[in-house]
Image (tube, rainbow, N blue to C red):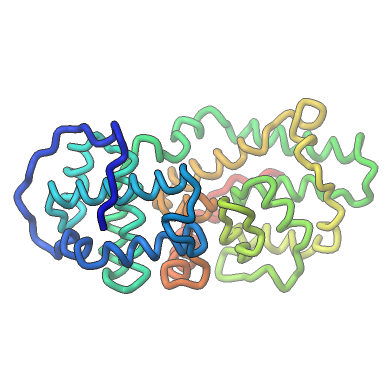
Length: 317
């Protein structure tokens, strides 16, 4: 398959390195390149052919293929160390990093590599433009600020809301514990039923993939058991939440952006030992095919790792 390179993005100097121990990704690329392209087009563009894509979409696909062709022609990749050294030599270019990440997703989903190898190699992939929120955000968003904002949410309901049994403070805590995007959290919260909330050990969780819209994913909303019980007890009020809840987080409301809760949540997970890819999965930052082996493994790992930190969340009241 002769696909031209993306102009001006592959000019970094390349040096050949000695092969290391392990299976050779280069051989898998040579054998499964065309199948990977078909898989990617089906996954990303609902089975369209390359010629059916829009110009920018076609340009992106070609850039990934060209990047992987160049990567595997200049480096022998057998393990995570090889990946780290290769990407470092390539200045962590996003086409190399994202292309390799997609290729590993493909290999895992069709069963050519196991979960252990997949997770280890994927962690070695870094891209300068694909960083999650800075760990410094945690220091800037103090828990006391969140507690004060929560009290303002309670006060808002008492003094400004005309909605009976307004669940705004409950929704605030829902965001705090789950780290969901605001728009997705509203859809999930307003349509919640008791049967949707599952309990397992010291956590409660809700499978949320049906709330996905467009490219922004959501797969699971996890929370401490005590909040899951509080949510269950007040389930009859969740539908009272107004659709345009975003205004309540602005200056006319509690003056505390919902995005700050999401950033705090991410950094809280990371600083308490949740692995980066699991934290991103919990927040819906990664793309996963629902029902795949990869998805089921991520659900399992997300619950396991959240259980370790569920009781560490500071309570808001």
